Length: 99
Image (tube, rainbow, N blue to C red; front, side, top):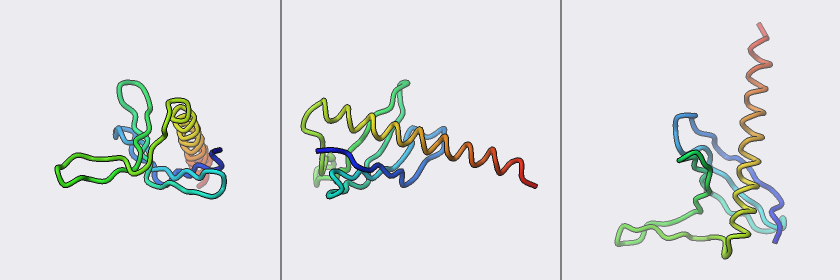
C-alpha cells in the first residue's frame, strides 16, 4: 500500500503541541481523515483517529499494523507539514513586501 497524497487540513499555533490535522490517501483509493501531528519532547509523532469508549478510554479507529509502515506514515506527514509551513512562511514573506 502506497501513500499517494497527504493533505494538511489545519495548522495550529506554534505554541500548541498539536501542529496539524491531516488527511492521508492510500493508493488513490482510500482516505483517512483526522490524523493529528503532535510535537512534544523535541520530536514529532502521529496520532491516529480514535473514538471514546463508554469507560472514557480511547481506541484507534484505524492504525498501522507494523512499525515500518508507521515510520513511513510519520515521515510522509512530517514532510508534508514542513512543506506547508515553509510555503506559508514564503507567502507571508512575499506579502510583507507588498504595500
